[in-house]
Amino acid sequence: MNNKRTKKIFWAILALGLLGLVINMPQNIPIKIHWWKINQEYDLKKPKIDFSWGNFNFKKDLDLKYGLDLAGGVRLLFEIDSSEINQEDKDKATVSLKENIERRVNIFGLSEANVQILKEEESDRLIVELPGIEDIDQAASLMGQTAKLEFFGEVEIPPEATESATVYDLFSKETGLTGSNLTKSDVVINNNTGKAEVALEFDETGAKLFEKATQDMIGKRIAIFLDSGLVTFPTVNDVIKDGKAIISGNFDLKEAKSLSAQLNAGALPMPIKLISQDKIGATLGKDSIKKGLRAGMVGLIILAMFMIGNYGRLGLIANIGLLVYGLITLSLYRLIPITLTFPGIVGFILSIGMAVDSNILIFERMKEELRKGRPWSVAMELGFGKAWDSIKDANVCTLITGLILFNPLNWKFLNSSGMVRGFAVTLLLGIGISLFTGIVVTRNLLRMFAKEKQS
Image (tube, rainbow, N blue to C red; front, top):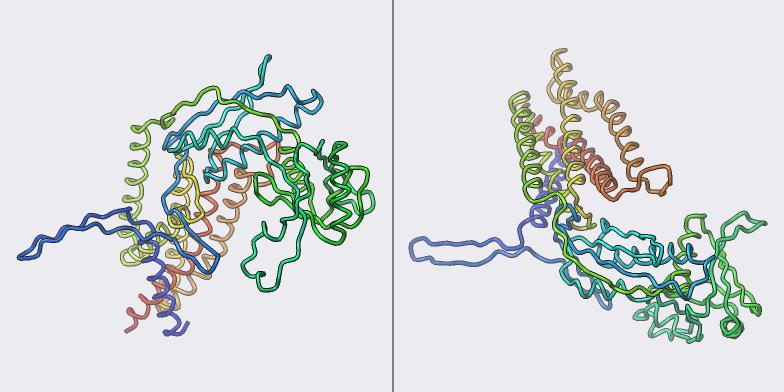
């Protein structure tokens, strides 16, 4: 690779490392300068991501999110009122309620929240455990609201208002239809196409309202909102008089089931009443967390010392690459964001071990080439090339394992525990970033080192 390109990549890596350093700096760093006639004290504050462009506003919280085992949180217990639900629809309504609560939990960015249905003889209970919540009353209020399902028709937007129009402006025609008019929603398979579709069935009042809405909206779209969030906006092809409609599209079975559950969350409202709310401490305890983190830090320090002791300047460069890896990984944890649990931290440390393993394979291959009398720069390039197959195979196997643990398709025969998934997410993300830092960052730094070695 030519020197100019090597230098450009080096400066890009340096900028990426500095950006990661800024993102991961503490909220406030007190700076005190008392020297000669200078007496200054001020707090260096972490910059915030908060900007606007026209009607677009973007604001991002860069704090790390912690799970129940690390930060504790709040436990809410609700009583489910199923008195208005037919017995045959009760199970479906309960599933819809659970999924609707889980969707609302995502408003808080709590991917590690725990939502459970506790079945009892007299009445069912809903348990919601939220990590790191400060405003308990707001959380309890949001959880307790019954799902609100609304139908709005498409309207014409004037050309001059197109740029500033929102989805609520585009779909603002009142239809009078609400979730109380929707009897149920089911997934059906089209016999002609074999594709999954979502069937809707309205009550008598809803059927009349839906007939009028479809009559007015031929060729246009009717949007369906759940808790003010847009669910879908199918196009009306025909007037529907019997109160039974089909939403067709390029759904797979999983997407169709998800849409049906969202609609049922409003079609089968089951009020819930807050019985109790309690603050819960970190399940592991502060002492266990401190000891675990201390063990991880000791391991990393020993690892860094081993790399320098065994490989000299090569090991030092590998450690710099690992530092860049850590900054990038923690930055993504903050930006995505990822809720960190203790198993997640273990996944992060394990991925660091995988990154070091890649460097060791590369360095040992380089040694072999140097023993054959190759020039240093040639030995370095051959070392990377020959080690790549082993690195690729090892990381692909770990990626497959991580995907099985994460279970993205929610297969019933695999584990779907939040803790296990937290471990899998950090492991998968760490492997991807470690490949980047090993192949791009460390390799570029070694090219700079090779240039210095030859001069």
